[in-house]
Length: 558
Image 1 (tube, helix red, strand yellow):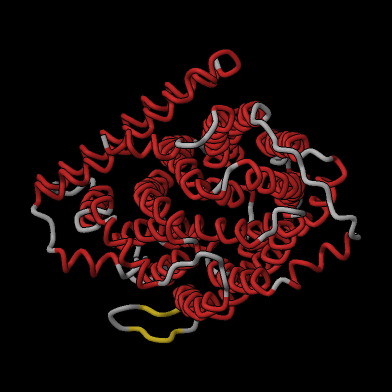
Image 2 (spheres, rainbow, N blue to C red):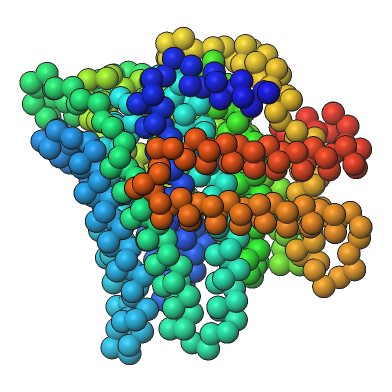
């Protein structure tokens, strides 16, 4: 009954055309997430390492998409000249998929001896073109959705879209990780290992092209005509707007603080902790479950409270996530499971809040220019962050701040630096003025009313216990660990059923999409409710920690 009420409230006052567009957007997100899952994260880093990339190339790899955001300023001009964000989005998104098709084919070509020194740079070149296309697509899509989805339901729209994408992503990440591990174990050369990534990238690209087809079915509001100002004058406006300028400063500071360490988490997992891909993708499942829980909570709050208070509380939680990594060792990395859970929960709110603030602060007229300038500025500093992180990693190499019960040396010092910079960026939020903003006191009062959706008391202990099974698979298993493992298997089986139904819908999308998308959403909603139910049952079965313990765990961050 509660789910039905939520769904009715979401669509209340929305006409049938917009309702259809929202469902199409959710489906497009699912298809694009398949591609994003198979071409990104640990799979992208693993492929780069297979090609022979070093620390510098890994840092540059993480910087490329952000550097490409500089092109979004030109993207806003393209949108204005073409006059259709839908057309720009569709064309550039197709070329993005085409570039990834070329990347997928690289193992067939680059492992020849004469290309040994060039193979990484060929990969970088293709990735650069793909990033530029994605950047132009991003500015067109953001402006399009900002005009398409009304402000009063925008938070819940992104919440729903992100939840569906997260479910699809975490299920397929497990399958992809298992596939790469099996393939790598059977491979005898880098070229053979590269074929495994080729298959994964190829499947992702097919789904990505299907996403473009669905995207073209979404309607587009008319693009408001400009006021006749020169392009240079338009570019100055985001910097002249005090609120938007302050928001950019905060975003730059936060993005730099997270970016200096972001790409090195995967390197740390693969090279230092020597964790297999199948386990790394299970980290993603934990983060995915907590992201779903967080998105449900934050998506309901953001439309009531506004994005600024949400940024503060989620920012505080997200500041400490790198600290957990300090305590991980190859022999015992259980703390990484906790880190991913806390990270997924708080960063889901940070993403919703950042999108909400950007769309609220940008004017409806020429908003593409504001979005483009924001992406260019944050992209520039975000691109410098991994490079700076690589330089700091080299500086910290061989240095130790403390060595005792915990080892604060080498890359672990980078984790501490990221935490400190995140904390220093949060005070900038108080200078941002957003209409209808809610005080932090009122925000906490509203959060308390949502506690029934937030079973934090049991989930950290369940995740920790369940994931300990993966680490000790060859050891003696206790009854409680077996119980948790069975629950994880049940989640994966349900995800497999969802994936098969999803593939069927993709094949029939041109014929039945309008009639079946509502059913698709309902299946996903039921699956999410079952995931939450599994953890609730576990809490009741084990008695769960006290409310005081749960509150303490919930406030620490990753």
